[in-house]
Image (tube, rainbow over all chains, first blue to last red; front, top):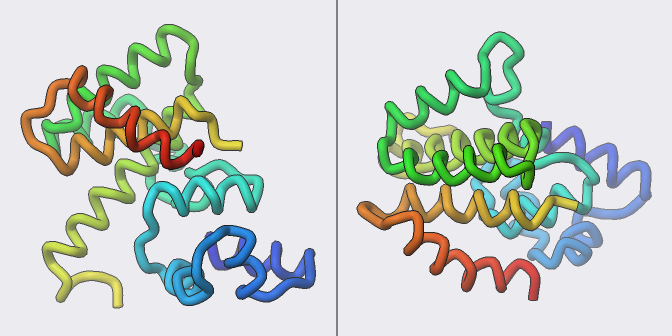
Length: 131
Length: 40
Protein backbone atom coordinates (compact mmCIF):
# COMPACT_ATOMS: atom_id res chain seq x y z
CA UNK A 1 0.00 0.00 0.00
CA UNK A 2 2.69 2.51 0.98
CA UNK A 3 4.63 2.36 -2.31
CA UNK A 4 1.42 3.02 -4.28
CA UNK A 5 0.40 5.89 -1.99
CA UNK A 6 3.84 7.45 -2.26
CA UNK A 7 4.04 6.99 -6.01
CA UNK A 8 0.68 8.71 -6.46
CA UNK A 9 1.64 11.56 -4.15
CA UNK A 10 4.97 12.08 -5.92
CA UNK A 11 3.25 12.01 -9.29
CA UNK A 12 0.42 14.36 -8.23
CA UNK A 13 2.87 16.89 -6.86
CA UNK A 14 5.50 16.22 -9.52
CA UNK A 15 8.29 15.88 -6.96
CA UNK A 16 11.16 13.42 -6.47
CA UNK A 17 11.74 10.95 -3.65
CA UNK A 18 14.57 13.21 -2.55
CA UNK A 19 12.26 16.21 -2.25
CA UNK A 20 9.68 14.12 -0.40
CA UNK A 21 12.38 12.92 1.98
CA UNK A 22 13.40 16.51 2.66
CA UNK A 23 9.80 17.43 3.46
CA UNK A 24 9.55 14.41 5.75
CA UNK A 25 12.87 15.26 7.38
CA UNK A 26 14.39 11.84 6.61
CA UNK A 27 17.24 10.90 4.29
CA UNK A 28 16.28 9.80 0.79
CA UNK A 29 17.96 6.43 1.44
CA UNK A 30 15.73 5.97 4.48
CA UNK A 31 12.66 6.75 2.38
CA UNK A 32 13.80 4.31 -0.32
CA UNK A 33 14.26 1.62 2.34
CA UNK A 34 10.77 2.23 3.71
CA UNK A 35 9.34 2.05 0.19
CA UNK A 36 11.14 -1.28 -0.19
CA UNK A 37 9.48 -2.65 2.93
CA UNK A 38 12.05 -2.01 5.64
CA UNK A 39 10.81 -1.08 9.09
CA UNK A 40 10.15 2.52 10.03
CA UNK A 41 10.04 4.01 13.49
CA UNK A 42 6.99 5.64 15.02
CA UNK A 43 8.15 9.16 14.31
CA UNK A 44 8.56 8.40 10.60
CA UNK A 45 5.18 6.63 10.51
CA UNK A 46 3.48 9.69 11.99
CA UNK A 47 5.30 12.02 9.58
CA UNK A 48 4.35 9.85 6.60
CA UNK A 49 0.71 9.62 7.70
CA UNK A 50 0.47 13.38 8.04
CA UNK A 51 2.34 14.03 4.80
CA UNK A 52 0.17 11.57 2.82
CA UNK A 53 -3.01 12.59 4.61
CA UNK A 54 -3.94 9.01 5.49
CA UNK A 55 -4.39 7.07 8.71
CA UNK A 56 -1.42 5.03 10.02
CA UNK A 57 -3.41 1.81 9.51
CA UNK A 58 -3.69 2.64 5.79
CA UNK A 59 0.10 2.76 5.53
CA UNK A 60 0.67 -0.31 7.68
CA UNK A 61 -1.89 -2.31 5.71
CA UNK A 62 -2.28 -4.96 8.41
CA UNK A 63 -4.83 -7.61 9.33
CA UNK A 64 -6.46 -5.12 11.70
CA UNK A 65 -8.30 -3.78 8.66
CA UNK A 66 -9.75 -7.20 7.88
CA UNK A 67 -13.53 -6.87 7.83
CA UNK A 68 -13.94 -10.53 8.78
CA UNK A 69 -12.09 -10.13 12.09
CA UNK A 70 -13.48 -8.00 14.93
CA UNK A 71 -11.08 -5.57 16.56
CA UNK A 72 -11.76 -7.07 19.99
CA UNK A 73 -10.86 -10.59 18.86
CA UNK A 74 -7.69 -9.23 17.27
CA UNK A 75 -6.76 -7.51 20.54
CA UNK A 76 -7.49 -10.69 22.51
CA UNK A 77 -5.25 -12.68 20.16
CA UNK A 78 -2.47 -10.10 20.48
CA UNK A 79 -2.59 -10.25 24.29
CA UNK A 80 -2.59 -14.05 24.23
CA UNK A 81 0.41 -13.92 21.94
CA UNK A 82 2.23 -11.36 24.09
CA UNK A 83 0.84 -10.82 27.63
CA UNK A 84 3.05 -7.73 28.03
CA UNK A 85 0.43 -5.94 25.92
CA UNK A 86 -2.37 -6.47 28.48
CA UNK A 87 -1.77 -3.30 30.49
CA UNK A 88 -1.25 -1.25 27.31
CA UNK A 89 -4.60 -2.37 25.90
CA UNK A 90 -6.24 -1.74 29.28
CA UNK A 91 -5.07 1.86 28.96
CA UNK A 92 -6.35 1.99 25.38
CA UNK A 93 -9.73 0.62 26.54
CA UNK A 94 -9.96 3.37 29.17
CA UNK A 95 -9.25 6.06 26.58
CA UNK A 96 -11.92 4.58 24.30
CA UNK A 97 -14.44 4.50 27.15
CA UNK A 98 -13.61 8.09 28.08
CA UNK A 99 -14.20 9.20 24.49
CA UNK A 100 -10.63 10.41 23.96
CA UNK A 101 -10.21 8.02 21.01
CA UNK A 102 -12.63 6.20 18.71
CA UNK A 103 -12.67 2.76 17.10
CA UNK A 104 -10.77 3.97 14.03
CA UNK A 105 -8.04 5.17 16.36
CA UNK A 106 -7.96 1.74 18.03
CA UNK A 107 -7.58 0.17 14.56
CA UNK A 108 -4.56 2.40 13.96
CA UNK A 109 -3.03 1.32 17.27
CA UNK A 110 -3.76 -2.37 16.63
CA UNK A 111 -2.23 -2.08 13.15
CA UNK A 112 0.87 -0.54 14.71
CA UNK A 113 1.02 -3.32 17.32
CA UNK A 114 0.88 -6.01 14.62
CA UNK A 115 3.54 -4.15 12.64
CA UNK A 116 5.84 -4.01 15.67
CA UNK A 117 5.29 -7.68 16.57
CA UNK A 118 6.00 -8.77 13.00
CA UNK A 119 9.10 -6.59 12.98
CA UNK A 120 10.29 -8.27 16.18
CA UNK A 121 9.79 -11.69 14.60
CA UNK A 122 11.77 -10.66 11.52
CA UNK A 123 14.61 -9.42 13.68
CA UNK A 124 14.66 -12.63 15.74
CA UNK A 125 14.41 -14.86 12.71
CA UNK A 126 16.01 -13.00 9.80
CA UNK A 127 16.28 -16.13 7.62
CA UNK A 128 12.51 -16.26 7.32
CA UNK A 129 12.07 -12.50 7.09
CA UNK A 130 11.18 -10.50 4.04
CA UNK A 131 14.19 -10.02 1.83
CA UNK B 1 -3.00 14.89 11.46
CA UNK B 2 -2.39 11.86 13.61
CA UNK B 3 -3.85 12.64 17.04
CA UNK B 4 -1.44 13.14 19.91
CA UNK B 5 -3.44 10.62 21.94
CA UNK B 6 -2.89 7.91 19.31
CA UNK B 7 0.84 8.58 19.30
CA UNK B 8 0.93 8.38 23.11
CA UNK B 9 -0.80 5.00 23.01
CA UNK B 10 1.51 3.74 20.24
CA UNK B 11 4.48 4.73 22.38
CA UNK B 12 2.95 2.73 25.23
CA UNK B 13 2.70 -0.26 22.87
CA UNK B 14 6.36 0.21 21.89
CA UNK B 15 7.42 0.31 25.50
CA UNK B 16 5.25 -2.64 26.49
CA UNK B 17 6.91 -4.74 23.79
CA UNK B 18 10.38 -3.60 24.74
CA UNK B 19 10.24 -3.67 28.54
CA UNK B 20 9.07 -6.52 30.72
CA UNK B 21 7.36 -5.78 33.97
CA UNK B 22 6.76 -2.05 33.57
CA UNK B 23 3.56 -0.84 35.19
CA UNK B 24 1.29 1.33 33.10
CA UNK B 25 2.04 4.26 35.44
CA UNK B 26 5.77 3.85 34.82
CA UNK B 27 5.20 3.53 31.08
CA UNK B 28 3.05 6.67 31.03
CA UNK B 29 5.72 8.60 32.90
CA UNK B 30 8.43 7.46 30.49
CA UNK B 31 6.41 7.99 27.34
CA UNK B 32 5.77 11.65 28.16
CA UNK B 33 9.47 12.26 27.62
CA UNK B 34 9.42 10.39 24.31
CA UNK B 35 6.30 12.18 23.11
CA UNK B 36 8.13 15.45 23.59
CA UNK B 37 10.34 14.42 20.68
CA UNK B 38 7.36 14.18 18.32
CA UNK B 39 5.86 17.52 19.24
CA UNK B 40 8.97 19.58 19.91
